[in-house]
Length: 253
Length: 174
Image 1 (tube, rainbow over the protein chains, first blue to last red):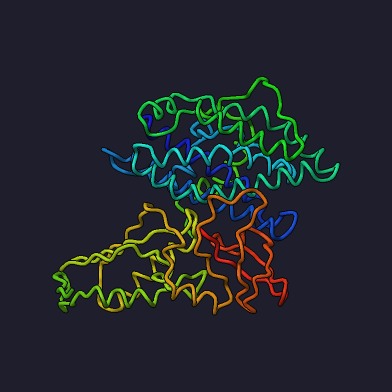
Image 2: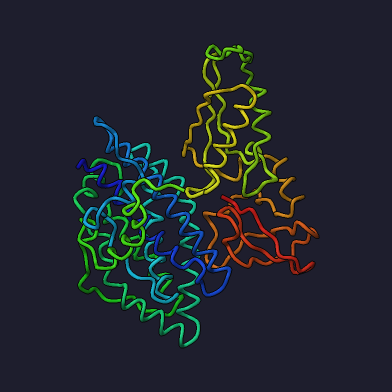
């Protein structure tokens, strides 16, 4: 598979899987306004995923019969074909874990999309420019919640610390480049991840200071998602998300 | 511009002005007081003798109204003899609230939704800082508080007026 297609699928899968996770909160949010907020973020992410999948389908169909669609990419690939990072497929847990997962990801995505804008691929650059402004809102919202919970009551602080313990080991993968990301950086399509990492650490430290959370020391990081080796959580997401299209192929409503 | 549509048996006269005035009747299904022209999502109307193309851009990546808007454009143009219209969606340049017409902003306020402030602040606002002075569309007071940055649709935030006590939607800067 050409590296541009793999890279585009990676961007799409990250957005789709986190969007799907967030959408699990719809109707279950802690208060109505935050239920609406997390559902809106889910909607933004799934919209971004659609833009990437549409482009991926175009790339996949180049020079052949053209049977790949955005829907077949989302609904008919198996777990090992998904290139999302492990962080985004982790379970929602409580509100603290969902918030922290969103914050870690938005703090990455905001610079990633900004860099995509100036990249050499015109379509990815347009998708990045469109999505950047949305992610600015996600980052601000999730940063404020990390601070509110971390610097809140004893209960909320304890929960935020627990979330940090559970999620930290999945953050290293953000900056361990897969071969297609190395290709993207070399080709000028996407950013050099080692540069983005510095910015991400600054953003996280800044918010952690306000939140009264200590920045964890370096530890063993889980990886593999970018190349299709996932935690068991992804299987459950796909089982729910893909059931209808698998059971009733081509079903429409 | 007056052109004759070659493929149409009735020799439909293609008029960009007519197409524009027809598009004025297509409203955003989520903010029905605004036409798609007020909203600034119609980027181009291309017409020559046998082809009409309407170029539109989404407000947000996940805007669920886009399919409905495409259907409505096709329907209204079809009713007026413009068959086989091509509708193209572009992402770049990215839509901004700066493209909303003044007429659109006035309509929003009259409808009870605070229009976007003219200053683009989305990319600069610091944590816990808020956009300044969002005016209540009901009593016109500036004494208002944000309830949530995310509202009933992707493009709106939720506010409350501290004077008349009414909650209201704010069409946020983008």
